[in-house]
Image (cartoon, rainbow, N blue to C red; front, side):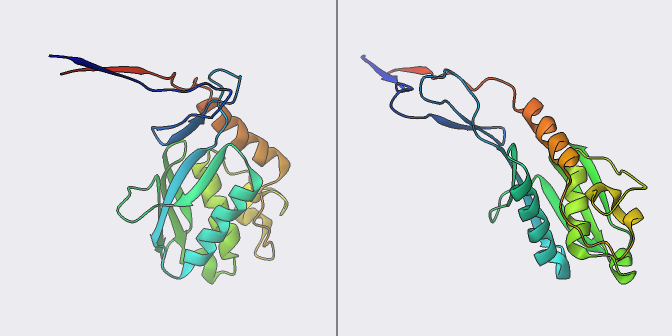
Amino acid sequence: MYSHVFVRGCTAALTAALTLAGGQAYAAAPGSGDQLLAARVVTYDAGASAEFKAAVDRGAAIWNESVDSVELRPAAAGQRANIRILADNGWPRALTTSLGNGTVYIGRQAVNEGYDTVRISAHELGHILGLPDRKPGPCTSLMSGSSAGVACTNPYPDAAEKAEVEGNFDAALARPAPAARTTVIVD
C-alpha cells in the first residue's frame, strides 16, 4: 500500500484561485489572502416569459450595467435557475424566497394598461435583488413602479437603489473565501 499526496493550491502572487460554491464566485487576489473579488451569479429562466423574453433579458442587462456585486445570467439548459420568470394575465409581481431567489410574473394587465415591459421587468427583478416598492415615487425611482404613471418608461435604478442592492449582496458575499486545501489519498 502506498500514499499519493496531492496538494492543491498555488501561490497567490502567481495566480488567482477561483472557487464556485453555493452559486457564489470567489477569488483570491495576489498577495491579499482570502479576499472576495467576484460577483455573485444569479441565474434566471425566462423560458416561460412568452412575449416578454426580450424585455426580461434587457431588464437583467440593466441590473448588470448598474451594480457590481451581483450578476444576472440566463440559466444554462438543464440548470435550475435562481429566478423563474413567467408571463400571465394578472398584475406584475415577484415572489421572493430569499435574496436572489424567487419567481417573477410579468403580468399582461399592466402591459395592457400601457406600462413599459422593460421597466416592469427591471422593477420585478429589483424585488428579487432585495428592494421593496417605494410608492408613491418619481419616475427616476425604478421601485416607484406603477405610481410613476404609464408615461414613465425609465428602467434604470437610481443611485440609492443601486447602493441598496450592492449592500444586500456585499453583505451576503462577506463570508471569507474557502482556503486552499490539501487532499491526501491513500491507496
